[in-house]
Length: 220
Image 1 (tube, helix red, strand yellow):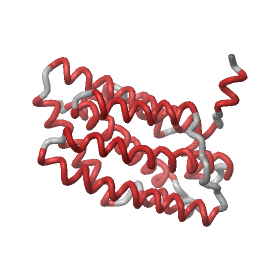
Image 2: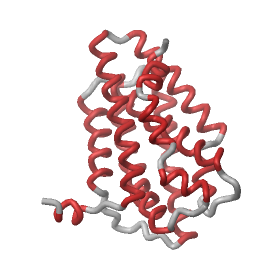
Image 3: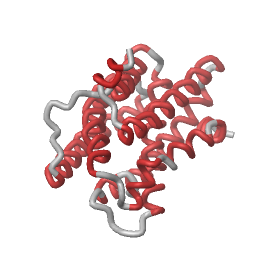
Image 4: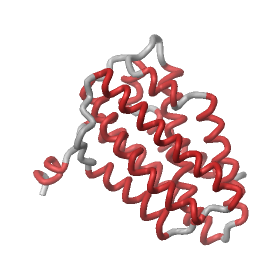
């Protein structure tokens, strides 16, 4: 069994929990409140923006065979930012001065720290996990839809053939990296896979339930 299949099977229940999140189910049903979806839109806009330095940190460590694909993804992330800006303008969502929530800040820092101080294989694992999570999450939305969503452009973006092919490439390359890794490095890659999955679930929780630094302070 390859590394990717191994991790997906090992964490099958958590992965299904992510794909069956109320945020996604309500989006598919067309009943998600605008404020909840706007929570996600604003926070994911910041996340994608800060993921660009994550990719930039990976490139110097990347094998030559990966550099072109990772570099081209920088352009793809900039195009995603344009999609966020377009959809925000159409639906009256303010993207100015967005403060990352505690969960978002933690996820961003996790990306940057992994890329900066850990082996390339660990950072590549985190990249795959996040992209695969979005493919499967938004595919769950699309497969459950009964009618077109006001947020359809996001759904179509992360379920497109191009995005699916990108995720398939990442998975195949991750399997190759894991085959060549030492047992200790492979274990670290597995840990980062789980870390990334947990952050993805918590990101949906944050968008659905709302989260702010003020709410954290009141719990102290």
